Image (cartoon, rainbow, N blue to C red; front, side, top):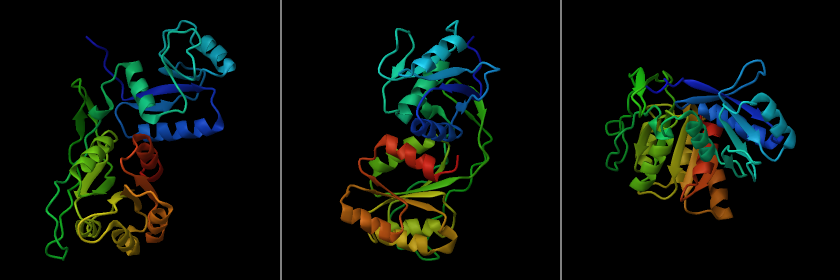
Length: 280
């Protein structure tokens, strides 16, 4: 029988530049939202579950040999060579999703998508919003546990961090659903700016991913209206658009958006945005 997986695994980090250590801090922060979780191991008095090593740093490799002399603790190397070891090596720059996958592989965990699933609102037809026709956001989840692909149960976060995805393209909505689901966020969807305004009038969102070109009012106008709402001023608005000219980015900034992601959305940039604007 396979060993029961833990809820959290410790990772000892050896080597790396200050810039990379800052990026890794964000990786661990974001990891706190998924199952299994990975946390920075901060003591030499106990043994970590995984070593993460800068393979280009000879002092780090020497320290690894001292800390993991038997070689039984899973190790992930970052660099241009595995230095004659059998450990897996990931190239630079550090790619967040590749690192999560390497962590999961090291402990024999199921894929990231097996993490807690968020509640998802069904998209409704585009409507003009009025007090009587505004869409109704999904209620907070009530399930206290979720099961991963292996059938093991894990506690589900009682937090109600909500995200709104506003896009009339189903492919984009499905992409965002698959990426946000891995980190346990609760998600509402809107297909038009009018629907988005209706949602934001009824619920607080930690972040809104907002398409620029949609039926009805465009994303720039929606962003202005959201930012004008005092109760939504702390909501981060991330524009999603295929337009990436300086003029378009200026328009986005003038409307009050907090970040700008171009389509097709790069997975790494999306994860960086999630780590920056969504609570860990």
